[in-house]
Length: 194
Image (tube, rainbow, N blue to C red; front, side, top):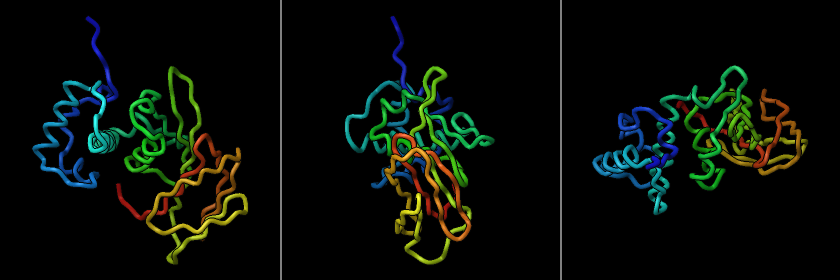
């Protein structure tokens, strides 16, 4: 009899993930016993599809923590590229939430390209711009191809710009040429530690 597989099978020792860290990503905090029980079900039945919005939020929280435990599995830090397995895009919707999950979980800097990967093929879905130095004033003016956008500090924003090449400028010192991909460009103006 064939064994059903699921995205969580890609992570070894899923049952050892810190429950408090999973709870940190939830909008409505849960008792750690409930998280432990849910996590055990994901270990035994990784192919199970979330039935409710709360289940999906819990799955994304588990995914964030699992990625954070092993970012090198998805992130090439030398070339600054994130490769999201295509199977993940079938499981976690919408794609913007899945990408945000990876952005939250991996310590990215400056410009990073995000791809969907399947059987050696890659498709660019977006770029992520994270300035090292952030201005103190808010809103922050972000210029993309000389079009200005006012963004708030401490936000992650997707700008769905479809132009192939984007000149992104974020004062005081950030200026890069980025590829938009299918979704556009994420601008991460959060002061955070992963």
